[in-house]
Length: 304
Image 1 (cartoon, rainbow, N blue to C red):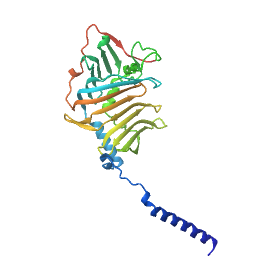
Image 2 (image 1 turned 90 degrees about the horizontal axis):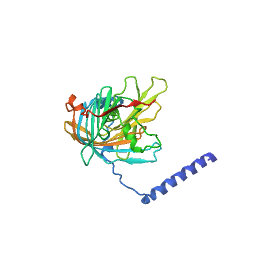
Image 3 (image 1 turned 180 degrees about the horizontal axis):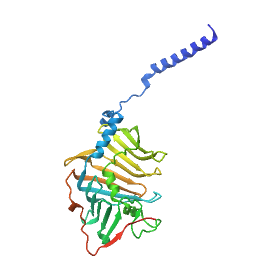
C-alpha cells in the first residue's frame, strides 16, 4: 500500500472516529420543540402571476370607507430625530373614497369640539382650523407646500411637523396604488418569527437607471397587505405604512390598526378604527365644510 492510500485511510478513520464520538455523546445535546405560529405554518405558495393578480384585486376594493369612529394618535420628531413629542389621542370621523376625496374631522377628546376639519375633492383641499378661525386652501399633490407664517426650522418644536399632514398622505394610506403598466417588477420573500411574506418591488425603468417606486409586503397566510413603502426619485422613503390583521366591520373586513410614518415631514399617525362601513354610499353633503362668514382664508403656497 503506497503512502497516498495510507494517508486517505488515516483521514477516513479519523472522520469515522469523530462521528462515533459525537453519536455516543448525543445524550448531552439539548433538544427543544419550537412552537411555530399558525400564520407561519399556513403560509401559501403563489406563482408570480397569482401573486400579482391578488395584489391587483386588493387595489380594487373597497371603493369607499365611512369611518364613523376612530382614535388617532399623533407623534412628531425633530429633523435630527433627537426630539420626539407624542400628543394625546383624539377622536376622529373620516370619509374617503378611492378617487382621493376625503373628509376628516378630528375632535378634542375631553370637550368633544372640532380641532380640525379637512376636505379634499378633485384638485383642491381645505383645512378648517376653528381655534384660529382660519380656513387654509391648497392644491392637491404639493407635498412641499408650507403653512403661512412658518417659524424658523431651529425654533419650531417637533409638533409643528403635524401641520405638514396633507389629505393625500391619508388616502395613499387607506387605498393601495395599482402597479403601473410600464413598471418592472421583482418579487422576493421575507420571514419573521411569526409570519412569512412575499415582497413586491415596483421599479421605474423609463429614465434609464431603475428607480424603486414602492414595495409591498403581502402576508402569505391571509394574503393581505401588512406593509408598504413609497419612495421618492432619490430613493428616500416618503411614506411607510404598516397594517394590522383584518377585522370584520359592517359590510366587509379591514385592518383595525394602521400606522403611517412620513419621514420627510417628521410625523407619525396611529389609526385605531372602531366603527367602519365598507363600501358605504357617499354624497356631496358629506364633503361640505361649514365655516363662519368672518373666518380668515389663507392660501397654502408652495415653497420656493
